[in-house]
Image 1 (cartoon, rainbow, N blue to C red):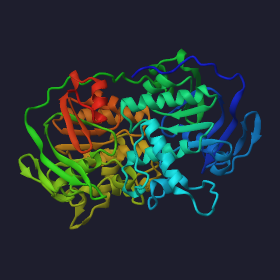
Image 2: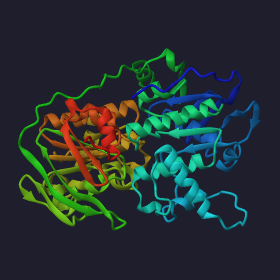
Image 3: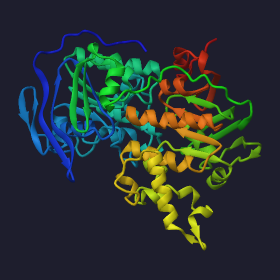
Image 4: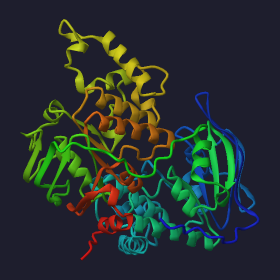
Length: 515
């Protein structure tokens, strides 16, 4: 990744000031007297672990929360932002990690929500569609303006959020993990866009856990820990290791470079000429074939929306194939049920941890035995043995460092990182032979990412075959033994990670292959 940051002049007067911002939730202090300053002409990175308070701080700036104390100044003028409508009027836009879209409306209708129209309440959707297509082309964010949001993948929905923000031509743009669904080439394009905004005297705030990207694009960095500012730095004066240590309060192991592994030649999963349709009834997987070996991590690289979601669903009994076979340890599991795939040793870390990974209104203890409720360990005279379920939960909470007030609280009370740890504990506790890991560290901070990746590597050492589907190309490169690139439902190539070149992978992710 090239460094597109520049030494452009930054205005001497603050563009936005947040002074003494404090915010509490049910007695928990999310932001503690935070001072945060953004200057016109800069890209400002906001770093911190899950729960550090960075998103809360930006939600206050965007009007989703009201601070308990403190003041906001925009252009040197004190303002009160009561809602996102107030923020938008001040030309502040935010792209959220948790999407703010209406599933039953189209892309164009979502983008057009709240826009002024000459013939209100009627909106000229034709002009909206035209502008969306222009933005999609300019910034390399392909999306169908007429598609329903409910039909889109998680990655495609994130692209819609970015376009929705750009549509309003903001002076201050807040981006929460904006590059997770982009190819390296598209990331470069987005970075140049950020720089162009800064060149025009505008401000960009980037919330990200990808430290290399912080170093590549930002001018300034503010690090939060436990709701307080622990560092304010010029990017040119710091490095990724220092930033990681400041985020978590301890040294983080350096993870670049691929694992030098010795996977078995034993094939445990074989995909033979598989095709499948997506929810829109169009071809999502197009006659794909590949194999997975025991003790191997096979990374699936690709821009979101190119068949990765459907592939995971086919392998976990959630989607039928229209052609081909799925073989697990020699057994034909083509179009098997989810129960059958679990029985045959397939574990699944889903893309949507809140929608598919956990039942949020059930307790942590109940969630941790969802896939093994019929296990004799948790039965007593044909009845559920709650004592054993409690002991199991307490053991897994300790083993997986799940931060929670108790095992009987609802799963929805967990942070994103702790939700992912709970899903990992639930899946790995039944000792799967194959692990389908879909975006396992998406949106997680450095500490949680390190933990999840170490657990994945532990499973590899135990001989588990791991299919790693991730939009983070650095993650794919650092963890995989082999890499397969998928584009429009086709496998463009499979090759050893040790000899992979990121530029070629990026081109293949965009549908370009070497002649």
